[in-house]
Image (cartoon, rainbow, N blue to C red; front, side, top):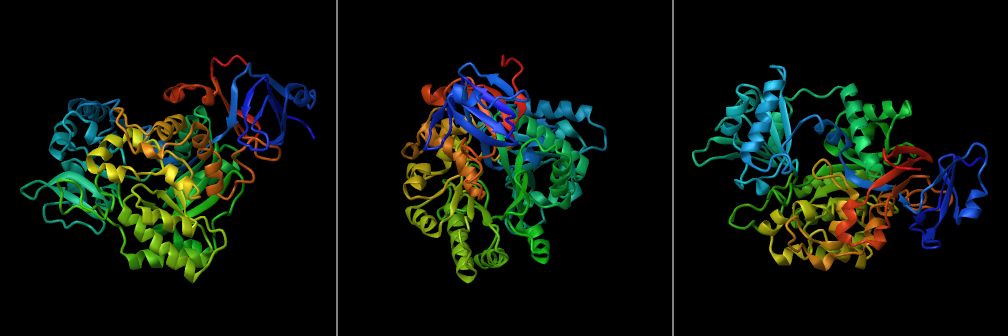
Length: 536
């Protein structure tokens, strides 16, 4: 067998209990051929083998972001950045939007993303009237970092026909001032009243977005992702086009949104798992609630100072039951966005009823985010064999908002990684990018330290070790996608997806983990990304 690539003089963390460390790895035809010490592995070298001396750098399995939005990330990189780093004040936010409005063609919608009201100097959302000052008659939407609410200016509201008489849609809320006038803030499903008017990106736009997102992923050592929900055939076509041309930058699993794509899948008999090692259909997914930081996650208790606000549940129990019965009848994998404990409870009830009606061996049904738990819900998850797919960096980037919205008792079981592991519940780490940064090392640090951006504790009882966190960002995602026998470890026969960093993450202060530099990313046994200053 021809050996295509050898990495040697390295510190290889294999994540394989049978051989946790090695000094060299050989790859052939996209797979790991062998691992061992330098003399042994260099013995596989031929005239056609590329050989890299890593000078002691550390090699890990490629990261797997088990829940993110590559299309959304790639598209948003072309939008106005109003994240807390780019726009920490309301005036700076408005100034960024003003500049963009002056540069865009007159008929173009202005799209901005990333603001966080809890981190703005004014500690509130912008209003339609403030946006009007800098956008005029150009329709504009500014999406909150979580993606579960946006602020629209008056021109956008007018195009959507939203007035003080417009009723709240089911599962959404049009926020109004004390006189009943819409402020421009649209929560959850109310966003669709405006979003559906924004021109849809073309297939070519979507392909370019995937390339932009792929560049970002590869630079971070991410070699596999799960697209956490598509609703349009054009989105799947963009993935397929790149795959057919051999241009997919990273491996992708695609979630299909139940509301839009379950019916055609039922007609076709299309199930989870269809595809290959590069592109594969994943779970069928729906959204059951909003976000904890935005106070729209469906909770069993009211939010502080808002006695009538228990968050928003998208579906009734009967609707959930029917949706997941159909998924089970199809024999497919299921996933649900659920952050609040009330939403999680409703999803678990629907899962249990569906799987009783149509049993699936080794179903690995998932709860995406799975934020605010109770002991009884943890026991139900363990009994049902449900996979948790959280974003550990939520506690870092959004944790201070959670601390305002939830008591210490609730935070003790917020995204509770240690509690999941102790109960044998499978966990796959992810980022939910572009909601937050896709950088896995930020998520790993957050899981290890359990601190917010300001250094406040965020359920410190749920800390894990660095090695545990790395496993959940690699092997965890592989397991959630039924691929634990070919991804997530550096072992012979597994896919040759690797990253190289400048230091050993197990030998540094966890606070320094985000300072690790990716030097090289290998996908399918080929160098897919290399740092400009890498000397090998």
